[in-house]
Length: 66
Image 1 (cartoon, one colour):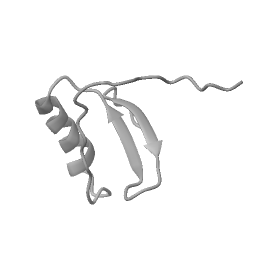
Image 2 (cartoon, helix red, strand yellow):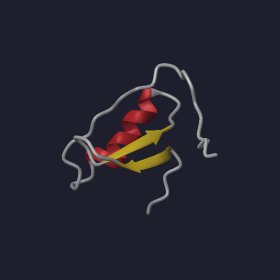
Image 3 (spheres, rainbow, N blue to C red):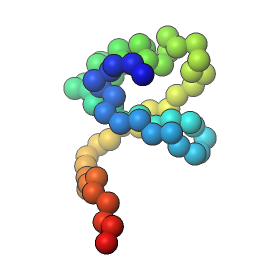
C-alpha cells in the first residue's frame, strides 16, 4: 500500500463503486491536487465521484457490543 497522509480511511464497499476513501485536506485547491495525483493520473481508475462534507452531525467509531 502507498503512503498518503491525506487518506484517513479506505473502505472496500458494495454499490456503484468499489472503494470509498475518507480524505482530509485544508482547501479545495489541495483536494484538486490530490485528486489529480491519486485519480486522474491513474490509468486503472476510469471514474470517481466526490462528495464534500459540509458539517459534522455525529462522529463515532466505537462499536456497542454487550
